[in-house]
Length: 247
Ligand code: ADP
Ligand code: MG
Image 1: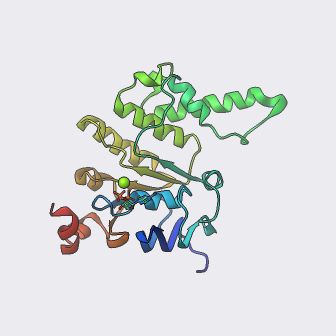
Image 2: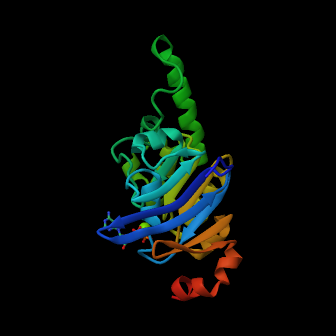
Image 3: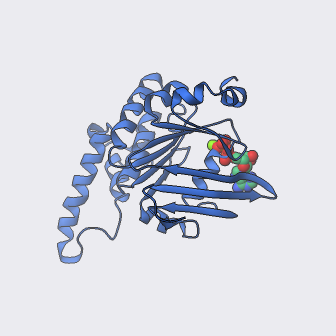
């Protein structure tokens, strides 16, 4: 396909595990500045789709274009460098380091100034840490050991670690799992804030949460797209009610 304005263009993507097609000729386009939510029953292939986009799993067929560049044969670190950040279901932060240090180690190397101007880089990193900490609501916890944060705060910290790389596409797999009601509300606000100026793909089950954040919803089922549209459209779709919402 020729160049498009989409940030992400996934076309005819397929991956088989021992003959089982976890993703089956799937086509999906994500716009610039869009917050897309993907829903669907367990085993639908949602996590596998993110694994393919970030290069953790290799496609059997099809294409994944990010800003018109083919990603599907690049190693994971090059996909990250291209501007795709991905959060896994379980938080992977450094529990023994402070919040500040967790954010600091996530600042991309090879950016900014070097050598004799290293002190300038320190300033740059510190500024970035402080602005991300404010964004994720942890500005007052910078010196705290990350292991002492609440479950929700740990999730926010991990999102912050991704924000340090300033990705143009940020993908989050079930970010509010295990969170309290209040933490869920704060996370919805957080996601709406951080999607300014970037695109996001969020996998989530909580329909109240989805309603709050989604620009558009994609429903997956058996490795394929079952429905796509506004929250109202997919909620009213009998096929979606049948395989997912009805349960
Ligand atoms: P979801 O995130 O929608 O719940 P997954 O993407 O985790 O679904 O899984 C989709 C299907 O692919 C499941 O049947 C799962 O068992 C299978 N699957 C995922 N990853 C692998 C793998 N690495 N090897 C074999 N099967 C896998
Ligand atoms: Mg999953």
